[in-house]
Length: 202
Image (cartoon, rainbow, N blue to C red; front, side, top):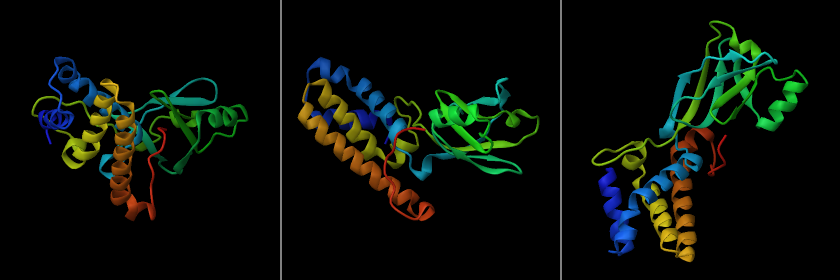
């Protein structure tokens, strides 16, 4: 579906003609997109990009996340294999103990790892899940094309919150979550070998 088609579907479901509710449709679609960027990671959204680290002078190194970054999957370094993802708190503890080699974390828009990754030609690559890109008009993206129902129902939940129908919004949130989990399980089940649930961003 295109952006215009998603908006029309939201409007048709809400059965509201007041200018305030109609005018909030772009905001509802954007809030839904941002929410999906935090919780919806189907295999179709997987991408890989090189990351260049800079020494922070404290035993750690940092690199900016890719522009469309939503959640980390793996950090691979040539000759050292995959690094283990840890929480920022765990990373700080390992850094203090000087035991962060082959571990990494993501905080804000930065990837943090051992300072050795700042060496020239280290060959670090991150596999991650992309956030749904912003679209408008007749444009579409991977989410609106392949998972329009997930985006649509999340946007409907945002509109229900806007009109102060909290009960319906909670039910619709749950339905959007169910659709998202089913889509992720289907798209990643073969690779992961089991069920997958929406998780917090990392």
